[in-house]
Image (cartoon, rainbow, N blue to C red; front, top):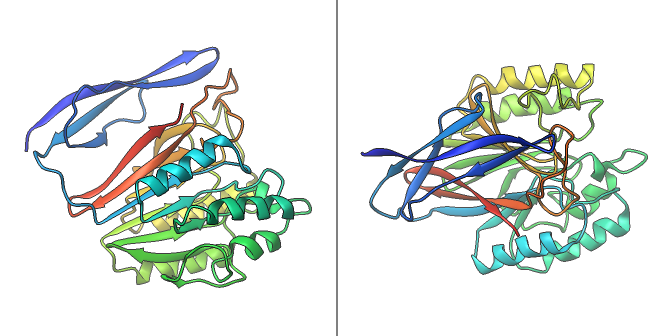
Length: 304
């Protein structure tokens, strides 16, 4: 299979922030593979397969809509128009976790006729912190998403897993920065991954960690959450994880953690943020994920 270099991603510092530019010049079937996430310049190597593999599954991933806005409406419109199998939202669904906000977001999500799965984010906890309203409107055993295929779920739990088209999907809860992944959840995760027999595994949660240069620019952790993150990494280290999707930072950041591709997809409509605190670059977007017999392909889709 012939491999050629089609593009380069440049990481430039503009106005105190990072700007990513991806240049591609080939309109054919390609499977992108990021070869390096540690350098300022990232080479994209693409395989030309000469045929379009039949999709087994297509879904969108996005996060941080924080309510109803034109960007999130556009994402759902695209999902309906492209007839994707489902959408995964990596939170924050709301800006302050109030009931009227959950009601409004739920009405929007239900209005497009596309099944969806949702993680919980820090904003969705509200004040005082509680998962009650999230579970009422988006709990996996409630009347929220079309989640009849979930095999591991409970109305009182904000983490679950399900299988589709040879992929094991795991949605987790690390919304509370003072806790991270709680011990009960980590025990469940270890058992869940041990029982998994699917060839591919994808993880979804809200708050990313171990971001590039986080020791200098971005650290949203506490001593307790750091300890939980270490336990989490030990657990998943024993398995092949194809990719991780997170939100929380209102931009697009691809990086690697334990050599696992991680995508921060926080461009769902909330006010843009810059990773290192400079002028915010508006990277409204969603991720389109396609599963074929050849593997899993992920595409960044910007929204103007």
